[in-house]
Each structure stands twice: as structure tokens, then as C-alpha cells.
Image (cartoon, rainbow, N blue to C red):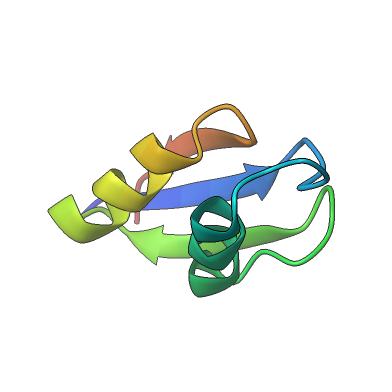
Length: 61
């Protein structure tokens, strides 16, 4: 199964509360913080909501 490496690249200053909550749910707290998640529709939907704040890479295991 593919995995996604998600990196926060922009600040949450000025973002809506739901976008900040989505980043927190992804496990991202600071700029340049990274998390690896399984590639599934739930995570993809969360990424779509904050796509302007994060970078996503697919990694194979």
C-alpha cells in the first residue's frame, strides 16, 4: 500500500479555524513538520482542504 509524506510549508496565520483543525488532525504543528499517513480517501480529503499549506509526496513501502 502506498503511503503519503505530508509536509507543512506555510503558516496557519490568517487561516480559518477548520483548516487549522485539519492540520492538527494530520499531526502537523509547525512549518516543515512532516508526517507519514496511509493513502486513503479520508486523508486525501483532508489534504484537499489544506492543499495550499502542505506539500505531498507518495512513497512506496
